[in-house]
Image: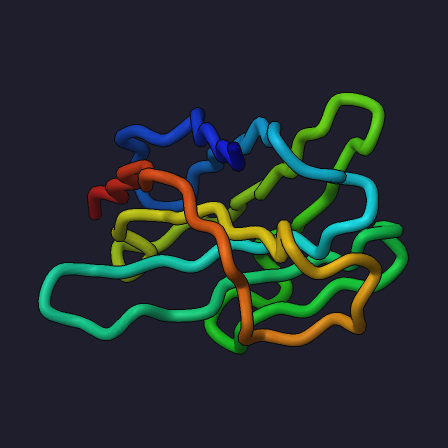
Length: 125
């Protein structure tokens, strides 16, 4: 059974930092691409970042490029999202995603088959 357990969200002032973590289980983490999406109230779900199964390739949405960093620790089955220089428009529920049933595929922004429960990030102005 695939499980993605996010942690690390909360309330922060604009300009501050947060780090989200996602602990994965129930699939071969080291062979699976991982990522993060977010959804703000009244807005469509938005791609944030993705990292390849090896950790060698990453991709970022335009709105977070240069401020957010995705990384993974295959020994701990955990993916991270370091968020710096946070802005009020970063306020959203952040979802950890995985291609848990797709082994060592190329990195892309779509096709994630497993989702976490979501973690609220609120940035105050």
